[in-house]
Image 1 (cartoon, rainbow, N blue to C red):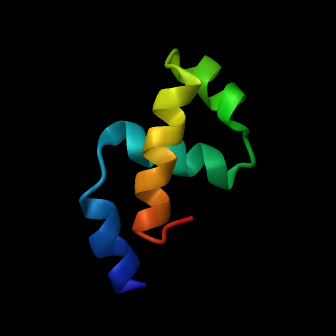
Image 2: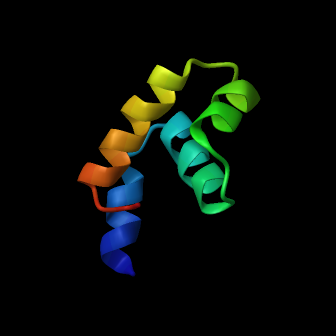
Image 3: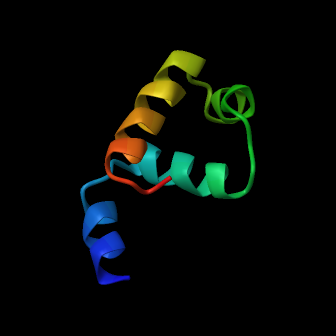
Length: 55
C-alpha cells in the first residue's frame, strides 16, 4: 500500500481526480465532460496512470 501512496504523490490534481473517477467506473467521455477537458487529455492522463501501474 505504501508503494501506491508514493506513486500517487507524483500525480497532478487532475490525474488524482481522473483516477478516482475511473475507480467509480466512468468512461473517458464522461470524465472529459465532467472536467470540461478533451478526451485526448483524459487519455494522456490515463497513460501516465497506466505507466505507474495505478490502473
